[in-house]
Length: 348
Ligand code: SF4
Image (cartoon, rainbow, N blue to C red; front, side, top):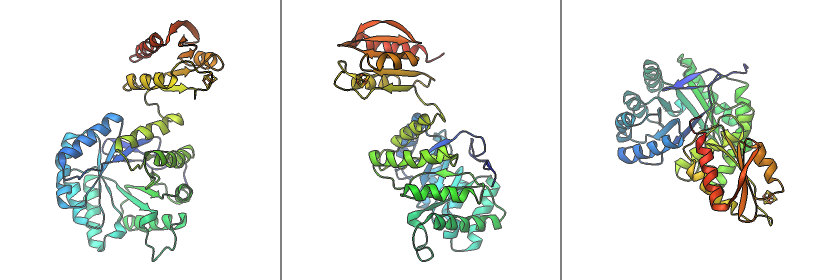
């Protein structure tokens, strides 16, 4: 199988090949509640979400896509199960992509209608296989082989209709199963991969499971777009997604803050300084390494290596910039100067 996966486009976002890894999320509002859904999508956009998926369980939701789309700025994917009419309606209303498993639509002619509509509008379909929803009569356990086989069955239906504008996901709650599924699949087909650990849990647990699973897949080059699934505000999904990409130096969001864990030597409030700096520099995307260190043991070394840094002392600290000591200041002034210096780089 080729190293590079093929490229597809969801609205104005190109996926696969050498394109940037994109961040997705999904709304948890009723899609038919246009006002609330738009507000949530705009919040997600502000945080950095690049593709949004909405559930389409009924006609009102499919109809709502038209107005929602006119008020947002990122591509919208309609998530459909079983009912081809909802897919047709969503596409007519401007959906930039469908998440739909053709094998779950009973009649072939209905699938054909959806495929023809997708071809006409040149929009992709994501085949999304989840461990929890594979056919248990056919597969005893949600093994990687079962997930991949299930995905291939859906894919073959589309391929027989000469439709290959496809993206694939093979999600499981189990991190090992998920990784093995993507490994297995990528040896068989070169469709772009949407990645995630499904039903990963609340903010704490879900972030960790997702970081490990998605992180490993990113490291192996087996991810083109991903969603961190959390039982939480979806804005948090995007925050975690950005940090995963930052951690692997794949993309850079915000500034890179290095902070010491603090210990018995700490005599300034490192936690408060970190939170204040994070809050005040939230909107700055700059390739800038900022070290916030508690004392003279590791502090000066890290602070010197960073673009800007502080090394704490007793209610005071040294401020470093580009390896040079800029001065020694009391704690309050130190925070103020640190933020001022960071902001200087904003438009550089
Ligand atoms: Fe402790 Fe200093 Fe290390 Fe921070 S930098 S953890 S204060 S030794």
